[in-house]
Structure formats: C-alpha cells, structure tokens
Image 1 (cartoon, rainbow, N blue to C red):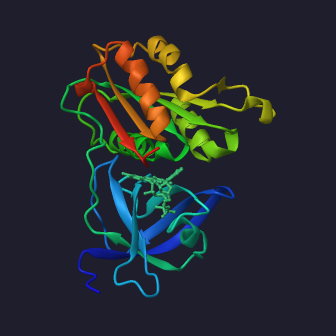
Image 2: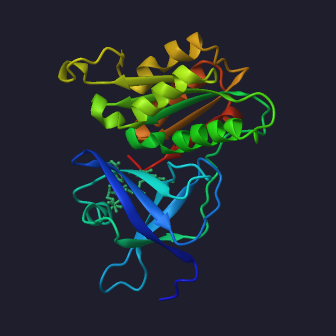
Length: 254
Ligand SMILES: Cc1cc2nc3c(=O)[nH]c(=O)nc-3n(C[C@H](O)[C@H](O)[C@H](O)COP(=O)(O)OP(=O)(O)OC[C@H]3O[C@@H](n4cnc5c(N)ncnc54)[C@H](O)[C@@H]3O)c2cc1C
C-alpha cells in the first residue's frame, strides 16, 4: 500500500463520555494544517485490506494544538467505530494529509454573527472554530472585532454534551463573544438538569431572536444529525434566511 497520502497518528488519550461516545485524541507524526471546521479522513489498518478503512471526522481541536481530537459516536453495526473503541493509548492509525471541507466560518459575507446548531458530535467544527478564535485573540493574531458565536448544542442527555459543556460555559463566562445554549431532549431522565430542554430545532428560533440572529445579520450553520439539520434549515428559512447564508454538514443520510 502507498502511504504517501497519509500521516501516521498515535492515540494519545481517549475520553469516554458514555459507552458509545468518546473523544479520541491523536498525535500526528507531522503537523497537519487545516481551517477550523474542516474534516479529516481517519483510517485504521484492517487485515486483508489494501488501504486503511477510512471515514471522515470533523476535527474538534484547533490548528494551534499538537493533537487532532475527534468526537465520535460508536455504531455497534458500523465498520470503523467498533474498531476505534478497541484502540489503546499508543496504538496507531492514519489520517489523510489533506484535511478538507467547506464547513468553515463564513468570512466572505462580512457578517460577524454566527448561529451554530449541533447535535452531540456535530459540535466538533464549532469547538474548533471557538478555540481558534480564543487563541487568536489571546495571542493578538485576531484582526478586528471577534466574531460572535451563538452555539445551540442538543443531546438526549446532559452527559452526551461531554466536557465541551463546561468548556463552552467557561468560555461564555469569560468572553463577550460567545453564547452557549446546551439543550437536552429527555430532561425527565436527567436529574438536576436546569438548562434548556427540547430538540435543537424546537428551541432554535427563541434563542436566535433573543441573540439578534436575524436573516439580515447572521449566518446559520447546522451540523450532525440529518433530521436536526433539515428542521433547523426549515426554521431559519421561515425566518427569512437565504441559502447563501445557511451552511450544513450532514454526518450521514437518514
Ligand atoms: C463530513 C463528515 C464529518 C463527520 N464527522 C463526524 C464526527 O465528527 N463524529 C462522528 O461520530 N461521526 C462523524 N461523521 C460520520 C462518520 O464518518 C461515520 O459515518 C460514522 O462514524 C460511522 O462509521 P462506521 O464505519 O462505524 O459505520 P458505517 O459502517 O460507515 O455506517 C453504518 C451505517 O450507519 C449510518 N450512520 C453513520 N453515522 C451514523 C449516526 N451517527 N447515527 C446513525 N446512523 C449513522 C451510515 O450512514 C451507514 O448507513 C462524519 C461524516 C461526514 C460525512
């Protein structure tokens, strides 16, 4: 097999949020450039196969970090994810050198207000974007006013929000450019949850209005589960958003 197109990555750490939900933190053998929001093609060698078994994953870490984080949901019947769950720290995989994708912060439209909708692992691109902006501001590399991000992050249960819940809540407290709205759709099974409840599509309009995310001022993004994306798309279209200002990244076909 020709590995020219691939970079070896080594599992540095795995952080489990649930039996079927984890962050895989890989250290690449060489620095791989990318724009926050893009996805990498991650692969594992499988006996009897010429090429690694590959799947695309949004990069959750930011370009300045020396690791590539992937926030992954395990599918028991899936080809790659059960194999990922067998990995131990130190085990290796491959990532295509070219990290690609168009689901990045829209800076072409000159709008600086961004309404970002995610289901569980669909948060990954927005985490990368938020961390990169925070780093650029902290190091003086950011030009002009920060982009304002309004992130609506949905899950069935609070633990599925992972450590990203606390990371984004802290960032919201310590900056003036982030609004983080975690929402859970099964609050009756979530003792002690006193945040937003309901599916992303159902609570989206309320928070968009409260944050001034109008069709004239904001760009809309949706990432993750295709049903949420279709729902969010319809809600924002009804609010007047045109296609030019709506971006989406579907992780699979319904
Ligand atoms: C651009 C892009 C970025 C992605 N980023 C992520 C990411 O950050 N995190 C992540 O967990 N996944 C992400 N995915 C999905 C990922 O590429 C795989 O499809 C997923 O991990 C399943 O791989 P598998 O080999 O285990 O299952 P497969 O054998 O490929 O899939 C089995 C079947 O399940 C469907 N399926 C895939 N994902 C789901 C799901 N979540 N729920 C229900 N059915 C599903 C597939 O369409 C397929 O029909 C992304 C997909 C795309 C296109």
